[in-house]
Length: 416
Image (cartoon, one colour):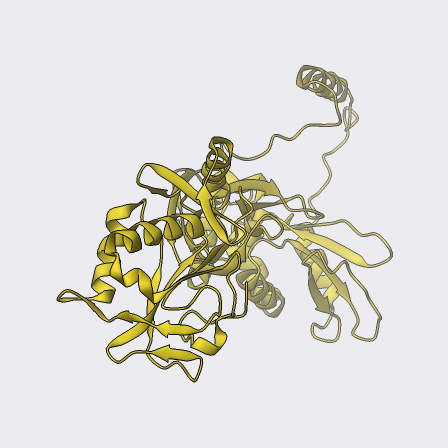
């Protein structure tokens, strides 16, 4: 279509000849109101069912110049009111449209006193097909014609695909599969814009990031789904739970508003975990066999003493570690508050050059910031609050759920 601003159209933006997007009617049509009604209804149906366009009354179809215009009143009614009434009476369902009047010919023909060019702009519709007087019309070149049955069905089937439709999906986060993510995905090719995402009530594990909601995304479409962390998979039933209302509000490109509500929960939505391709029964059987073999082993020879614990038995482990490594715990708490689903961390020197996977969140603690850092880490290990997973010569650890819950002021799991 020609570059025309439908809100500020002037006569110099109108081409001199009709096209797929422009239909002209001479001012002479004002002498036959029934004919004008018929042409208006067919044009609105045709443009809405096709790619949109302009129906213009008051331009000579051969020269492309204004030839007098149409009176700004039909009887006692303003022309705008008359056109509104006719479109709503003639076309079902009524599509979006806009009416403009041009009174200045700018030297391109003549517009009579008390008359104007009538311009009806009809954008492409996503709610078709649109019927006029029992028939459906489309644009075919410079003509408006009746649509054949198979074209009508094609327009009707496009109705769903032309509207945005969102759904949700739980998944394990790529490259960090201990984290559970909730995704918002598009089912159609139409983009959803200005997407508002709400969870109600906010799951327990996400209450410390309440200010992040509602999450607002500028666009979600087939190529741009949106995933966000919601829980650690191992404790997702407790930290995320079930019977959560997911509320989606969004718009299409025509500013139509959509609302969707889903009742979601991890117990019936999370992906099952399988080991390889073995059927579940075989996996269970293999694990039971291993368990029986281990139970027969004598890990402590008879008559020997039980090993002494590395540290004395402590009534309150958390009170103990707060007294001796409070600064390190404070840094961990700050990190967990900002990234509540991260559990992995490394210890290193600021002098070292360390490159980590940019797609994987990880905490870093430096020897320069914490005196005797390795010894402090060992205290947490001895209390079974972290465990080591070192590889590639960098000391690497995982924060347990007990420690994370304590630092995030959640319901704490006491250690024996």
